[in-house]
Each structure stands twice: as C-alpha cells, then as structure tokens.
Image (cartoon, rainbow, N blue to C red; front, side):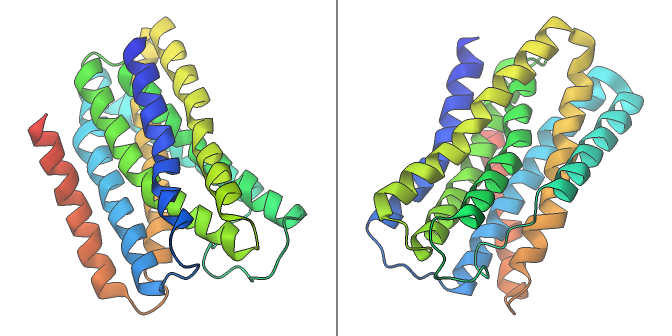
Length: 244
C-alpha cells in the first residue's frame, strides 16, 4: 500500500514540478520546443507500454487477456475522446478569460490524466509489484512534467496569474492519485484482473501516444526533430529500466 501511494503521489505531482518554470519564464514557447516535449513524452510512454506493461500482462495472463485488456483500453479512450473535446494547448485562441471554455479545457486535461493514474495503480498490484510499479510511476511522472508545463503555459496565455496557473496545473495531475488507488484496490481484490488491468493501461497509453501526442508533435513542420525526440524518449526510458 505504501508503495502505490508514494508512487502515485510522486508521478501525479510531477505535473506540478513541470509547471514550476512557468513562475519564472516568459509566456511564449516556440512550436519547435513544444513539439519536442510532446514527442519525448510519447517515447517515454511507448517504452513503458512495450517493455513493461505488455510483457507483464502477457506473462501473467497470456495473449487472450492481453488482447481483451488492450482492446478495452482503446475502447474506453475512444469513448472518452468522443465525450471530452480534443484540446490543442498551443493553437487555442489567446485572450480568453477564465470562463466556461477555460474550465472545460481544464476538465478535459484532468480527464485525460485518469488512465495514466490507473496504469500506476494496476502496476503496483502485479506480481512484480515493486519493479513494475516503480517503472510505470517513473514513466508517467516523466511524461507528466512537460504536460504540466504546457498546461500552465496555456493558462498563463489565457490571462491567468502565474501562481494560479501553477496550482491548477498541479491539480490536473493530482486526479491521477484517485484512479491509481482505485486500480490498485480492484486488482488486489480480484487478482485475475491484473493482466487485464495492465493490458488496459497499455491500450490507453498507446491510444494517447498515437492519437494525441504524435500527431500534435508533427503538425508544425517539426516532424524530423520530433521523431528524434520520440526515439530519444524511448531510449531514455529503456536506460532507466535497465538501471533498476
């Protein structure tokens, strides 16, 4: 229990850590750097899915559990995308006040963080709980940092105070703690759900990678450097995995 609580809190609050620079920097960020951050995050999540979540789900439940869980994760994220509007943090018109549209955007960002928390909780309930859980918590934390920065940057561009933007960005990541604990308790009570939960988390992460992060990092003419950042993110996560 202590492990999942510590891992989920640290990975979730990495969103706030990533938002810290907004307190000191200018309000602008070039498309190039934004795309690099998104692609690097995608690489980290890809490595975590392919080297940790999917192998563990396959080992503990076999291909059938992997396929079912993966499909369920993709389906849930598809339904979530159909009900929660897609948010482009860089291209949303500036000059908005903290009105209903800004609130909707914040809610959408928080909703998109829920599957990430679930993947952390489920990982801590697996047989190799310590290693798998720590690796996934680390991967999600590394992915959350640039996300928190981009969220805070968006809010500042909407005329929100820097400190308030930092707090809000931190809270959007904190919702992961709830789904992390939920995933841990469910899979701990029903051990047969563990491989399905791991595969579900992998499916959700793969959906986010291919549907959101990669397209957004390739939309402004920075495809080549974004590809490099994606590969570096994969290698960086694999290096961390081998170091554990």
